[in-house]
Image 1 (tube, helix red, strand yellow):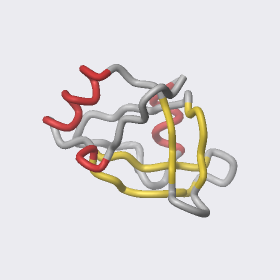
Image 2 (cartoon, one colour):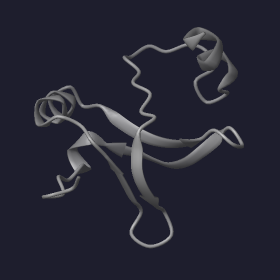
Image 3 (spheres, helix red, strand yellow):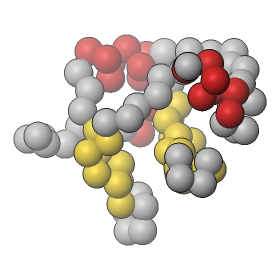
Image 4 (cartoon, one colour):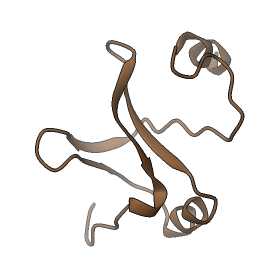
Length: 83
């Protein structure tokens, strides 16, 4: 099922040469003002992803197109008290 999803997304072309993580639990998105996308992730995962130079891209599933990004993990910021 995941492979079917990946192959249906044009931007991925069904093939990937690097690890891919699909984040579906987004807490908030505001692309109009400051371009803020919020999600929960452990600090250890963030440190690891920054060290491995991961890149984030917002992708709309309603029209199958990129919504924002790509953004390097080095630009990610922790929001204190975000619950």
